[in-house]
Image (tube, rainbow, N blue to C red):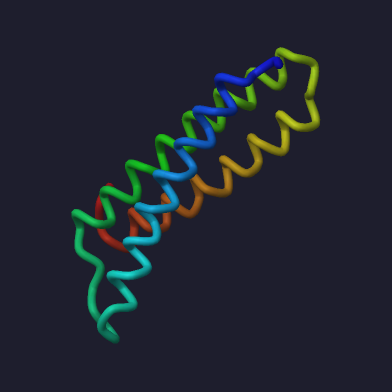
Length: 95
């Protein structure tokens, strides 16, 4: 199967990013009005950036395998995640 390694890498990154971003939600929701700590935000950002990297690698593989539509959808999803990460970095001053 073409792109299996890239897909597995993407899925693994998605699990790690999901856990890291869930930690952000839990931390912020634990006490009303509690600020998000920078270490938690940085860990979430790093995991999401790894997800973007693996998603782009998977998208490139799809493109090379002649699946241009799927590759474009993957790139659009990664662009959306990047915009959300940029916003999170602004909120916590982690630029």
